[in-house]
Image 1 (cartoon, rainbow, N blue to C red):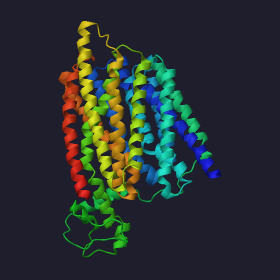
Image 2 (image 1 turned 90 degrees about the horizontal axis):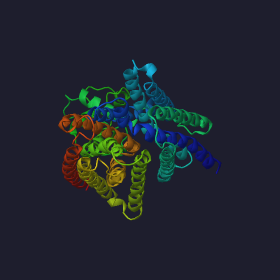
Image 3 (image 1 turned 45 degrees about the vertical axis):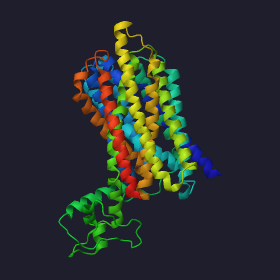
Image 4 (image 1 turned 60 degrees about the vertical axis):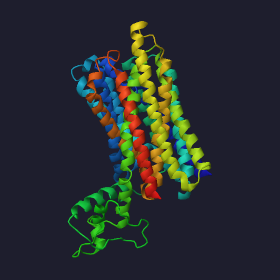
Length: 498
C-alpha cells in the first residue's frame, strides 16, 4: 500500500508538468500561425510553412531524444533539460515582442522556435514513459495493461484541465501578455516537477543498447557486408524468439558469418555482426513503412486543421473563447473515441481478430480525414461567398463539424497506428510506437510545407484573398485516394500475417 501511495504521489508531480505543457500548448503554440500573421505581418503561405516546419522538426527529433534517453541520459534528465529548453525558448519568444530587441527580433524568434521544438520533443519522447514508470515500479511486467491505463487517465485528466484553465483565464489575450504568462506557467510547472524528485522512481540502469541502436546497427552491418553471398547465419542464443523470414533478404547479410571470421561472439560485441533475431526485429519495423506512407496524406489534413482552421476561426463571428472551445471539443472527441474503440476491442473482439480490428480503426480514421477536408471545403466556399453578401458575418459555429472530424480522425488513426505497432513488432520494440508515429507525422509536416509552396497560386497575403477552398478540395481528393491505398495495404498485411 505504501508503494502504491508513493507511485500516486510521484505521478501527481509529473502531471503538474503535463498540465503546464497543455496550458502553453493551447495558449501560445496552437495559435502560432495567427501570431505570425498578426504581429509579424507575414503572409498566409509563409506563416503556414513556418509552423509546419517547426512542427515537423519537433516530431522528427523526438526519435533522437528517445534514443538519447534510453541509451545515455535517462528519462528524468531528458524531461528536466528539455523543459528548461522550453522555458528558454518561450522567454526568447517573449523578448522578441519588445521594442528594445527590435533589431535582433528575427534572430531571437528563430532561436526561440528551435528551443521550443526541443522542449516539445522532450515532452513527446520521454514525459509519458516517465509517468508510466512511476506506476510500473509497483506492478509486475504482466500488469502492463494496468500501468498503461493509469498513465492514460492521469495524462488525459491533466491535459484536459490545461485546456479548461486556458479557456477560462485567457478571454481576449494580448500577444506579449500571452507569451509572458506562458513562460511563467512553464517555469512554475518545472518547479513543481522538480519538487517531486524525492518521490520519483527512475530505472536503476540505462540500457547498454536500446532497440533503436539495434536497428541502426543492422543497417550498418548489412551495408558493410553487402559483398557476402551465402554463409551460415549467426544467433547468439539458439532459443531465439524470431525465426528467419524471406523478406528484405539483403538485411540477412548483417547476420552472416564470414569464412575467415574470428569468434562470432567477439564480432558481435565489436558491432560487426548481428543476430538473426536483431535482423528480424528490423524487418518488422520496415514492414510498417507501407502503412506509414498512408499517414503522409493524413498529416496534410491534420496540419491543415491545426493551422488553417484556427486562422479561419479568427475571420468569423465569435470570440477567442470560442476558438479554445473548438480545441476542447476536438481534444475531448479524440479521447472519447479512442477510449470507446479500445473498450470494444478489449471486451468484444478476440485476440485473433485484434490486428484486423486495429487496421479497420485506422481506416475509419482515414475516412474521418476525408470527411474533415470535404466539410472544410464546403464551409470555406460558403464563407468566401458570404464576404460579398453580408460582410463576412458567418458564425464561427460552422467550424464545429470539421473540428469534430479532426478529433475523431486523430483518436482513430494515430492511436490506431500505435496499437498496430504494438501488435506487429517484437516485444522489445513495443514502447516505441508513439516515437515512430511522431516521426512519421514530422515527415508529413515537411511534406505539408512543400505542398503549401507548390499550391502557392491559391494563397495570397490574407485568408480572405486566398482560395483555401480549392486547397481543401485537393486534400479531399488526395484523402479519397489515400483511403483506397490504406485498404489495399491493409489487405496485403493481413494476408501476409495469415
